[in-house]
Length: 102
Length: 102
Image (cartoon, rainbow over all chains, first blue to last red; front, side, top):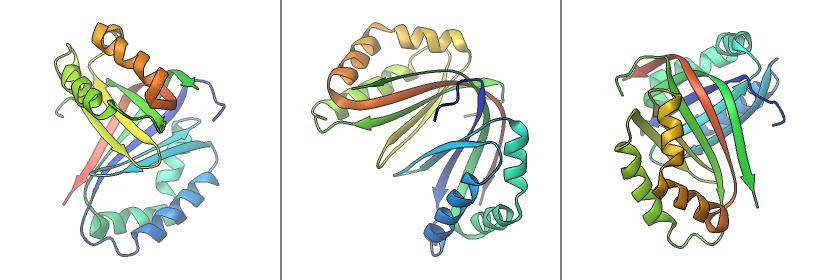
């Protein structure tokens, strides 16, 4: 990801339920759909006891549009009904960034 | 975590090397040490292909002090020398938050 701050991050923390049928397919589909959204910059994801997905966006408008995307809305509803015991979403402004590479 | 936005998040994304000897102990130690820092609010962590640790802080000053903590500085150095192929750190202001619980 080559974008320099400021940009936006959505931190999505979730706890899966036992009923994860269909989750993996939908997760892949949503990831593909997100990459096609205007203002999408990238994503990191990892899961063990909880799942953490951080997606990066050019601005708040892009986040708002992705949240309101009709296919994404269906996935969100299905998530609340079936796949998640709980989740938490944080909308953040990335102010500074640094890294290291061997 | 009961704090309402605005507060700060540090998103730490990392790729481990093969040489992870001592990592687990240090990771646990740093997690305990972080909780004792002034302005520390909480943490979420998950690892599969990459590791994502998001720590939450009251303000930028608390983040600065944690980064400069002497034991944490040693852990950071050891991380660059041995445990990580790469990492990326993003300093973010959490502006909005919402959730769901079954």
